[in-house]
Image 1: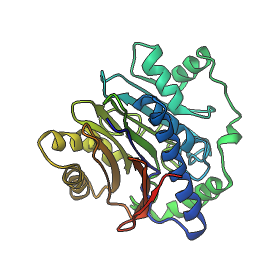
Image 2: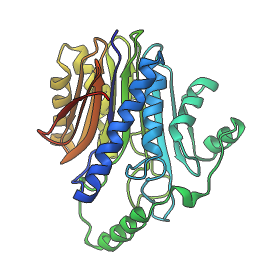
Image 3: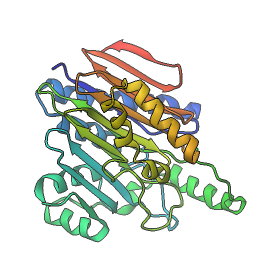
Length: 308
């Protein structure tokens, strides 16, 4: 199989001009990181973990050190990862003070008999695995402090704006052995209640991977995504014979019509086809296949370049 990787940087209402180039470069670099792993013989799981960890370390994205703040001004992060080879999966939620929740999710997948650990249990497991803790201030950016202040200020005028915070990062990959995988990671939504968990760590909503179908990672309004099981729903349409684009349009359309929920998906099929679709205003994404790098942020805007 020719390896494929697709990454996303989360659905967004609109990305300001001053951030756009940083976001574009970040998402492209993440795809390059994942593709390099695949080309060196790494597995699909290695590639999605590597790409997502890169985005967690990038302050422009809502995951890791760029995560939005909850009502108390703290960072609580969620992540999940899955291998399509045997449907093994690992997830963590409401984790604090670690740099890369996606790496912890993979440890849950590979070092425990469970799929999902949360909060203090996840923290104890991280410590047992030798995962270093970092000061919580290290995950907080000036931009997210301002975003929380703005959100609290506007909360008085209860606006049902599903557009505002759709940030997540994710990746899907197909490796040379024909295995697929997904990884998704997020800081959640601004001003969320303590302990709020969205779709990202939930297998079937935040993502799914099955070698017999393909892999998907989602982004968008977490509560809406949970209610429709967006990831598995989209792959169900693929199983029914729909193309990746048709499947994505159907499931995103369903979520929008039923719940007014906006979001986006990235997909790779078992045959190595890939697709990106979103209903939010924009969704930074990048894909690499056969040495060609495809990327974009806004609708109807795709650039293609040869990998350097």
